[in-house]
Image (cartoon, rainbow, N blue to C red; front, side):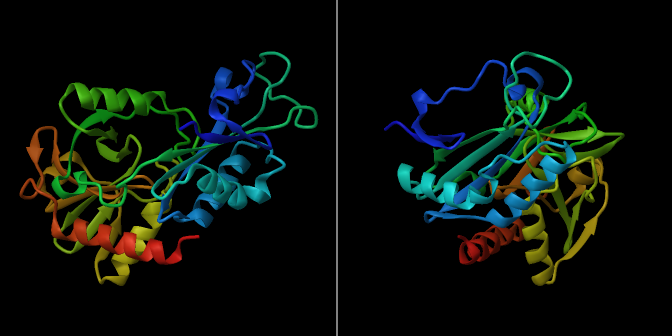
Length: 287
């Protein structure tokens, strides 16, 4: 079935949606994005994603599209039109398509932002069997630009990281800078030692994950201790458990890094319980 997508005020069959070759995202990676999960036909953590999107736009001095205040209804309409019960909605805003290529930002009075949304149907997203066995990661050097807190479409190095992991027979990569883990290629990274969750503190070095915020809140409510600090690969290898969080994987146990088993080499009880809590509570608040 052909998807219906949203492009600059219109709902269109995906084959009919076209963006200019002069769009700034294509030429300069001058765009931001968000991904919102859909469970039981409802949006998970929508408010958090909308607020982070607005922050990303502000940090880049990028104008909002005219339909910004209607994003919730656009999301809901795409869910309806595409019959999504479980899946994701990808949203991208760019600085628009001026008449020609130029490093200088186009005049926002004459160049409208580009707004694109599309769905991805993912049956079984909540009951992903991978969570029962966990994922394996490798460590790679973090050579991204310095503003990783802005959710931009500059995803080349994370994509390269995914491919490095695939070639090594792993599922993903954790990036390391100055000897400390920053985050995964598309997720926030955590270890558990005893009853303490350890994850890097928020800064320009990592994405301020929406799922991260919710999971840490639920962890504290479950009487787990949280330490927001840097940690090393050696600490990962010595941890009792490890996991990642993202909008599409929720809480995903990590059972191996660089060929070394973490804990018992199987998903830990705390990570699995956090996944259950996150799904239960997020569904209650879904819109």
